[in-house]
Length: 341
Image 1 (cartoon, one colour):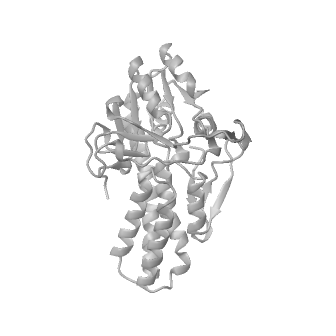
Image 2 (cartoon, one colour):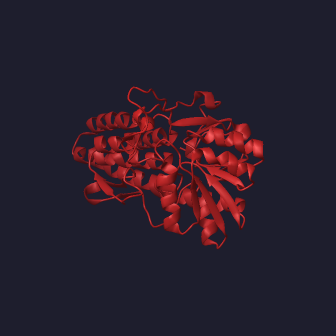
């Protein structure tokens, strides 16, 4: 891929692509504190469940780099404080808590003072990133079997390189099919209210040379009725034990339409997105974002002053609507056990 969503920069700072600026301009920013990382996640400079987890892990390293001379207990207290700060940024993506819990657990199990613990945390954050890169590739390889030559795929939101540490989840099989010379056309739903599909997915696909067509969210039904969609491939922010999954708002509607029109819908996500503590999707917390994201586009009002707006960032798709789940372990079906530690 021609874009890398995250990296280490000088002095153990975190370099991100500020996704708010796309597709107009590619802007990178260096985040030098846990507070800056938390703000970047909260304001969706960084988004996508796997990438949020990686960024939070790196954020702990950045936030504690000035505490390397601290005694062990003081360092661990600072770690807990910054982990709580980062954990409160986005409630739905389970990868955030998975990564933070892993970092805290590793630090507590590591002997030594602040310097030793900080070095271990930096290694662990890098490992989480590298594992995600490998995970994306494996999801792509397993999902490749679902992408025949000439297929027309519809995707929603962004589950590509900008949402992960590698080539993506839902977009990974598409990228590998394109590399293999298969003809693939992707319909990209715009994904209101923040237009992650139109702004981010279409940008990614165009840079990779994958043919794509941006559609408004309300066009999907007509496309399916006209038999112009062969399959739907989306990501997930959290998957319950029974297979119900939360993804960007609008995914549930696509799933209902897909079932009615006989179009298979697949969910592509890493095992770390599985929350086996939840028996079903009713327990998945749904983030409510500011109504201004709905009543304005790019800062320009599209609704009259005083108009109220709902803005749930996600909805939950029941498992019965899903043809299969593409993970780094293969194409699987629920029920699901606990994600790897």
